[in-house]
Length: 255
Image (cartoon, rainbow, N blue to C red; front, side):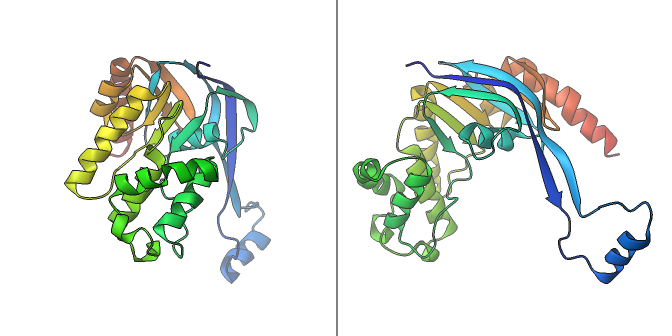
């Protein structure tokens, strides 16, 4: 079945608690200042009225400043954050390559973490059993795979996390600023694998600050700012818009 994504008027509001244990001075100000209000929490729109659709063959690049809502949108598509309003309809299995290594248990071995991380990606024990050796081979960690990962270097952890996420060709691929940790040999190997994933996936959504890479890999782009989609179209036009209307404006207000 062809993959499809429909996001219609989706919004998500976050509440942040500033200080759950205020000091004596802060408590006094809140109590006796008539205008202080409840300053222990602030709310903001992480996503607001987001609408777009994708079908098989689409490679969507998402650009925006830090805090624009890019990663939050990907997490919503995966189901980590449910929308507070609006609807999301996805046809096809999503493979998220976002925050690789999240959920690793550092007391367990690399081999055990393959199964743990695989389950977090929605894969069965049987699937991971069939993929285990390929993951170990790609990661080049065979000699250390049964060692607790608390003894791994950051590069080794990155190699293991990437290998788990990248071993299966997905129907829908979500990528968020993927950096393949390791030596130059492994980085090139990982980049080659990412290009294969791009080619073999039905739909790709790619968040990146590397604008040239986004231009070369994507056929659509959208620009996010303060939780909203402010423009969408072809990558060349959207990157020009982003640089001229968002980045330049941000730079101007800083001086």
